Image (tube, rainbow, N blue to C red; front, side, top):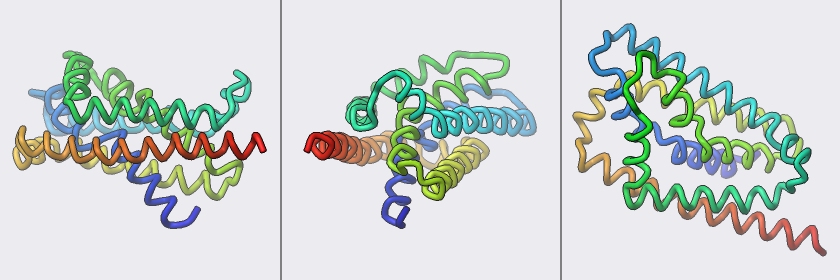
Length: 205
């Protein structure tokens, strides 16, 4: 993969996983916990979500093939799903839904943090799309996995600094960042749909 493709992969995963948006939810879910317990929850949530996303990245396309779903079709469907997520971000529906999922729990590391907040439908679809574009090139797939690792590392760091970040941004700052990321995701999702349609036309010729 060239640098432009890696940048696109990083931006797409960063926007869809949204470490900044997850930070306030992490604070809410771990309210009253000690720093060491919070760090343990952050480690478990990040590792579990990473494991799920790696599994889908490596074997998701094989599952699609078994189900008779072509990669161009999945690109179009994934692009539409990401576009709907972008609309949710632009109109704050995503934040409200995530807060609804972030119910109080003794250990929120598996649910709702690891899934569906980090490894949710959007991020799973994204990692399958990105590894599918590698077309069996294991070097490119490895590069996508490294990008995923970088984004998950950012998630972990944002979790550790969630309280400071929440104070620094405030409600207004968080809303502005969320809307900017939503616009970016909308453009990226349209590109996925265009790539899928182009691939269908190429296969049909």
